[in-house]
Length: 142
Image 1 (cartoon, helix red, strand yellow):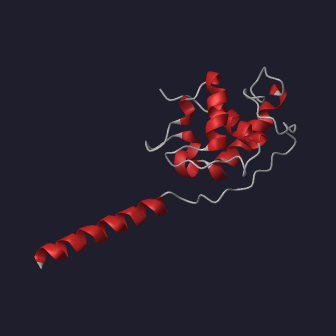
Image 2 (cartoon, one colour):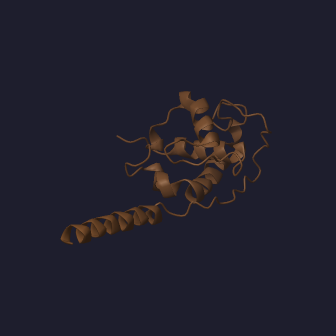
Image 3 (spheres, one colour):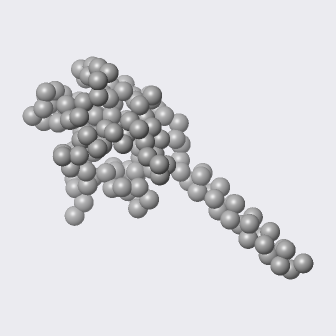
């Protein structure tokens, strides 16, 4: 009888703990992103951030950073941390470098098998690249 009670207690504790993790995940309801006056990038997925200084639309960098900050706060910070400072469960996005644009856009569009949702039906690539531009504007970890 005592073993049965202990097993039930253990299972209940585990389920409550798992429920706490789900709640702690935060609001994952996608938030709409107003991309303002950024040029429409179209449907063909770009392999390079067009809003990075020196790129095709690099003159839009400042506006892309502002839009990206808002988009990041509403859609990414719940998992990746405020100002991209990960708490350890997700990658520290400040460590991304310019060479991994194609990797970034593929991951954001398609999600991952480790829990990141696909954003391709929710965010257009203007918003995705604005988020990347914002993250690139943050100081790198030491």
